[in-house]
Length: 270
Image (tube, rainbow, N blue to C red):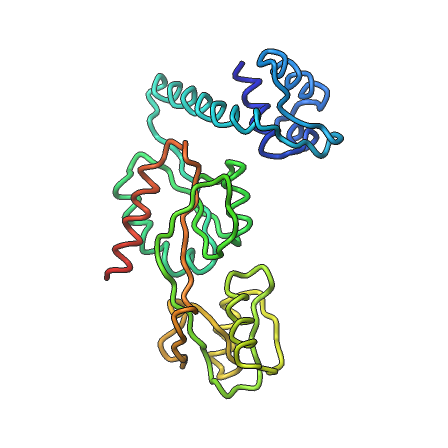
């Protein structure tokens, strides 16, 4: 039964029989047979198959997925205790501003509070973080872009102030790539001010800051990311963005989520 649960969860997360089989190192026909057997045992249809590379979960699959996760988590936790290995692993994915300017303040507190947890950190954009948490390759996500993260739980942990950095009279606008969380605010400012300043697209905050340090260009950036000597202009409150923690409701490491929320509150209040 545990094997069937692992196969089911992988197919559910990937929405793809072929990719799920590859990740599980089994043949696709074997995987299909296991899913079929599970459907017969439950007397329900779990997936609407549209070829081996596109499978749509049914409502029954959505309900069964939560049960499968809880069962697998309970089993793995029980095995760990029987082996007297109580260490746990927590992989945390962060989008750029959080990873560089917020999480380094938080991690020492987490490491001290949870000495039996092995933390692992990953820097990705917000969409990549959300996808990885959904697929359980990350335990917890910290993102700065207001994207739809269903079925994950999402909670605001802080507010990030954005400013117009650089010389406001500059004739060059340094613009992040479309997938960046701050791109929207740059476009909003330009639209509100009818700006026709030529764009230079830069896909890295450090590169933008290095250019600003040379006195070249301007851009909407997080105030937390700016070295003190770079000039900036404060902006209206609509240029503040929420920072979020995302996670599975049923995950075993909820105390870590609560600790992250509390740690962000200490940053905000300091």
